[in-house]
Length: 538
Image 1: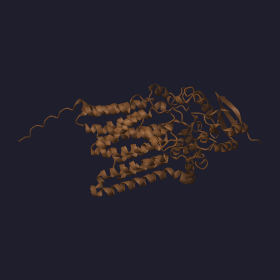
Image 2: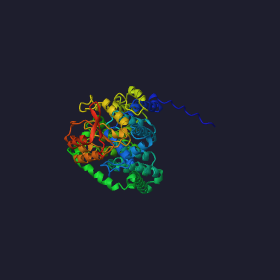
Image 3: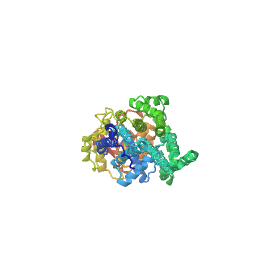
Image 4: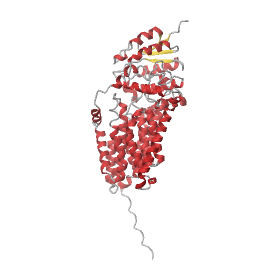
């Protein structure tokens, strides 16, 4: 007797169909378009002073000038080592490689979020919504805050957390720990995220097939956490190995202690007030509230996924307030983790309304509107097309890059320097100085145009950020700077004699007397002058 034919499967509804491949395709296309309107001209942006300083320190290290011992420095070595790798691989004085690495990290995050989302929610669209949110934030940042350690360090932590959620077990835990250790070498502030990372490792270990049921879960969690800790130690050890090999660890510890002096030792506003003020941004507040709600009311499977990210959100609210100076780039971790929580919110909504796809599609649209309320500030196809002609040439574009325009005169009334002046100075230094000529940058006003790392010339001012050190940490180092200028043989000074600055610590009276005594004017480039070291008397 034959079985009756199976009933025909009903075709999916339009909204259900749209939630699948079409929606993911639209989101991928949106991400590609946004990146295409940003990446080409991003590679032509100049360097903010800290990137320029780290590149110059890396070049000096390669030449035998040891960080922390020969150069006053309090930052961790991770990004300096990255600049060393890029400088020895592509040549010193090239600004594009670090931006290419930074953009590659952004793309890697998008790919990982998509894969993590497909594994967690059965579809990639929630992760892509979160990535769109991050793109809207990051592609709206100018050159003062991109490629920063407070983005790259937390990014590695986040990648490790998603790795262990997608790939539970010892291998995933060790991969997560290794990334955490490397992140610590870049920015030690990531230690703040340790509770959330430990939670995700423990929860993933309990859920892995190797846990062997409830009886084996405590043992599995312990193994997972131990594996993570060992791998994190290995990652940190690898990052500090170059310092250890040259006996610089003691100098590093002494250097880090300097961060408690000067403006870095000031805490004018209470921690609680700083934390609360961050939630004054409506999009942040709304997304955070939805993330907490999703973690509380979602099904258990989604709740297990969401809890570590909600904990991360709570912890990251303390990240920026812990720092005494309100640098804009300290907001990067908050927006990064907020974006991932938007992905969790989207996944929870799509899962909850699986049987009502039109509701799922509508909720996804609302979250997408929250994620990206408009075109990112620096997504500009025209600028990207123009930048294609500048790429490959080792000179700055004739037109000021979009990401830097707001920081040079006449757009910034606080800056006395124009883009044309800056270009002329860089071109002069590349043409009229040799690779062993030291360049002292004594420009004392915003945006403190970077010279040393940008043209591949070491500074005789043996401090992390050169002249900025006097303002941020220790004005007493000016006398040491003056002695260094006197001791230099092949050196030039870039400055504006008698320049007035916004802060008394940058008036540099000792250097104002020293430079005319040992240097002579050689070139005037707009208002900026280049003075060269006088020959020593025989």
